[in-house]
Amino acid sequence: MYPVFKIGVIGVGAMGKNHIQTCRAQENVEVAAIADINKEVLKSVSERFGIENAFTDYRDILRMREVEAVVICTPPFTHAKIACDAASAGKHILCEKPMAMNSREAEAMVKASRKAGVVLGICSARSRFSPHVELAKRYLSEGKLGRVYYARFTMFRRRGRPGIDILKTSKWFIDSRKAGGGALIDIGCYDIDVLLYLMGSPQPASVSAVTFKGIEPTPSLESPFDVEEHSTAFVRFEGGLTATFETAWAANMENRNEVLILGSKGGLRLNPFTYYTEKDGEQVSFGVDLSPKRVSTMERLIEDFVNACVEDGSPKTPGEDGLKVMQIIDMAYLSAKLGREVTLKELQSYA
Image: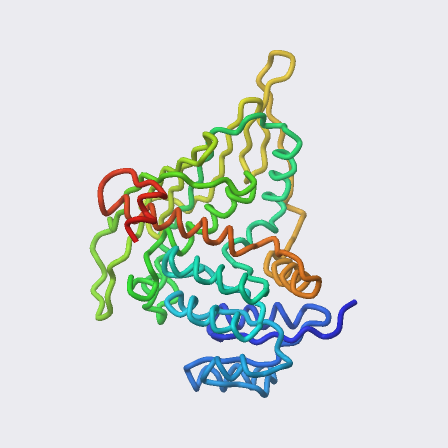
């Protein structure tokens, strides 16, 4: 058992409070300091959780020698700056999703953490700890699917636009200058990460995508609303793997969260978990009931991150995979803008 591991939480809105509660539930983990530019929120959270070190400037946390790591829960347009400053201060970093505004910022975060020798974990990878994903990973590693050639991820919300339908005070979600994009960067990042994890972090090669803001009437807002509600991206990876990601904050359809993985010997549906294959010349399928497994992916995320920091290891949620997620998202947005497929090489030269 390691000594008490002290963490600072930067940004104490809804996700920040969630992280504070999760850290406090961990044995030998202490939230030693918090920071937020909103003085009223900062005071409320400080009093609620009994955290004396409460600052309006996150750099005050970075100056605390006893703080070993920070959790970044601010809006995405601040992530890269805070992460690079934290790395320079020798603090390990767990960053909420999306990792950054774009892949250039994500790359700067990875480079800064490598240079400083600190751990960089990304919260868009929290689904890696779910029972469905872990079982799918086992099936793939055991070769039950054979050669995987295609996957399809669908995540539809009937009405779930942050800043409009939910989290109504957080208007930054629908402002591209602060969020980087809409549904794809906000929730599509989870699905992209799941595929990277299941398939052993394949290298993305190109993306063809379209984006829509299709729900009418368009909300009448005083703040900017210039991001997509719906995106569809077809991704090619090196080695022949392909995948489609359908992501919608708002759609005239029921809520849907579906993952299909197709291989030469078998296929998987993740929820309900079902394995499709052939046995003795017959088409068969086998279901696995994972409903009794109640797992807090947030608790396992924090536990894994702290263990990586203490043991000088790599977290299950590495920044390098977060960078690949951002590269795919950047290619998708550029493809939608240009109306054609975009390669990673083109993206890097375009920047």
